[in-house]
Image (cartoon, rainbow, N blue to C red):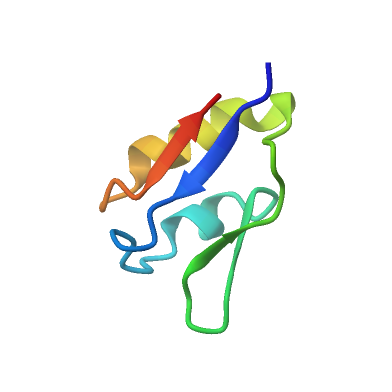
Length: 65
C-alpha cells in the first residue's frame, strides 16, 4: 500500500527540520518552506517519513494512505 506525506502549509512555519533530516523526501522552496521530492513515499523511506511527522514542531506533516 502506498503512503503519501502531506504538508499543511497553513501550519508550517518553515523550521527546516523535515528537509534537513530527509532531503531524499523533501526539499525547500525559495522561501524555506518544504516541498515534496517524492510522492508516494518509497517503502524504504517510510520509517524516515514517520520520524519527520513526529519531529515536526508545528504538526504540519501527515503520513496517509
